[in-house]
Picture 1: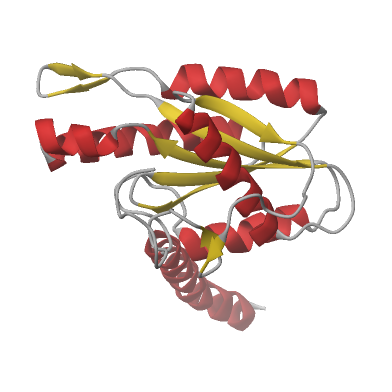
Picture 2: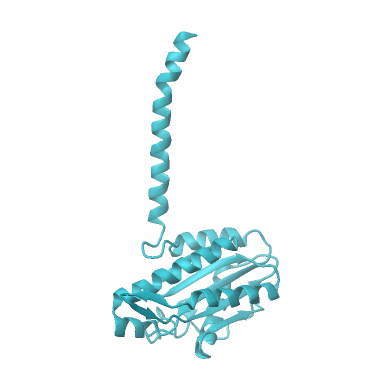
Length: 217
């Protein structure tokens, strides 16, 4: 019995050490998949989690968000101010997504995305209204209040198999329409054939397309 207790007491520190090591390793892996500026998931980890969420085959909403006149902020106040706006926007979106049992990510630049469970189109409208109000709060930087405005597009998925690429594309189109009308949000109710032309799998005119302007949409 004493030999067993001795062996157990010797093994406990080793097991505890492995447990701490595993925890640190998990945290390092997690940090590598996070955007260092906002703390949100980067594109690939976000899409992986978004597909998992959509696989439940229940109502979901996919959102694409873009900051309005972001280039203006960078040009007039500097990139540090732009980083402050991106950081605040990402953190606000991340908290909102967590509150709605969803997942959010930074796709790159001033473009973000999220997936949240849907509870009906009216509930989604109310949620987007609240999200816009939260995101469009000024950001304090270097003693200045920077006005922040966002455009949001949402693709509402009710039931059945959902394709993340299609939903992101439809949400992106609605975001662009909202931006053309001065900001706010718009919802795509049907996953019809995309209205805009496609270049390299993205809406024609978006940054990253062959015929894109390279300017903020």
